[in-house]
Amino acid sequence: MKIRVGVFFGGKSVEHEVSVISGLQAFNSFNRQKYEPVPIYITKENELYTGEAVADIANYKNIPELLKKSTRVFLMCEQGKVQLIQYPVKKFGSSVAAEIDVAFPVVHGANVEDGSLQGFLRHYNIPLAGCDVMASAVTMDKYVMKTVLKDNGIPVLDCVTLNVKEYQREETAAYARIEEKIAYPVIVKPVNLGSSVGIKVAKDRAGLAEALEYAFTFGPKVLVERAIMHLREINCAVLGDYEEAAASECEEPISSDEILSYEDKYVAGSKSGSEGMRTAKRELPAKLTPEKREEIRHMAVRTFQVLNCSGVSRIDFMIDRDTDQVYVNEINPIPGSLAFYLWEALGKPYEELLDDMVKLALKREREEKSMLTSFDSNILQNANLSGAKGVKK
Image (cartoon, rainbow, N blue to C red; front, side):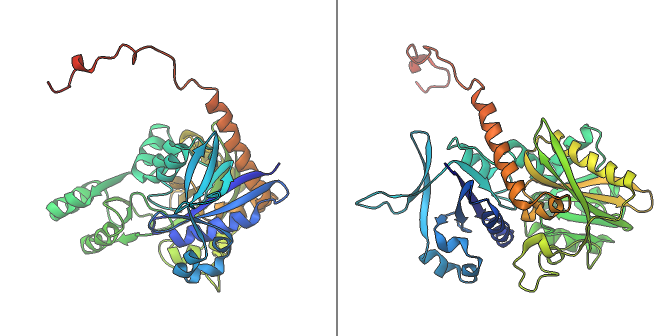
């Protein structure tokens, strides 16, 4: 019997469109002999739709028309099965649009990749591919991620965080706090976004003001750190879990400016802009010495496991050309295109990568079911709210 995999993509995120591309790449790459993938599109209003129409990338040129041809659904757990129920529910006949055995999120950005969707799916007790709720939340908050890595001896750049209310109350004090800890040039980025969204380099206070205003349009909290001007960016993916994990090949993205932009990642090199990270400009494999390649791959696996990741994540590194020091820049718990091209470079086809991710999801589910989550007691039989603390008399 085939495993029914619900491939979730889209969502309320500035990276919505990238997620649609990544999600449909995954949907189309599952082995149909073993799996029955079910496409589940999440609109920017967080409504769920399924059907043949949402599996065709051409339909996303006109989303209102796409939704008219699709079936809106909601999740329901019935006798241990997770069902997609048509909404509005039919008056007669079955309203079950599909059933799924495993949830497979391919989402990017805040509100979906940060543990929000993962928590929603776990509520239905369904095996979940990729990072769990905690790992998703930690990896998507750049400051929390840096704190955990630094505590485990993994090199990261020092930083300052700033929230929008603090900035609005006293701009001058905010500038001074940043300048006291970090010398120009600095890089400013939203604390919980990926895909190079909302990022600017500032070389003086005027540039800092501009960069902060820009970053705050994408989120209420930003991170400021030293900008490495003689920089090499190296990416490496990791597949596995807390017990066993392996690193992919390394790539060196090619940027058109001081920092790798959204356009560099998803538009450059693609005539249609619809192939995700596949066509981004890169050196693959990256031109590294064998020693530096292994240093980065080892650090990637350690970063992945320290943050308790699962499935596939991509770790982005920075090399300071002046010192040859390697730093972890960030980790993408659900990378664009699931970084499948980094595994293809080592001879692992995308179909096999997806299979490995489903196996890891089912493994985690077996382990969690073996854990004690409740125990019998008679506490409710003897409960008396009249004597409970905090109850109004």
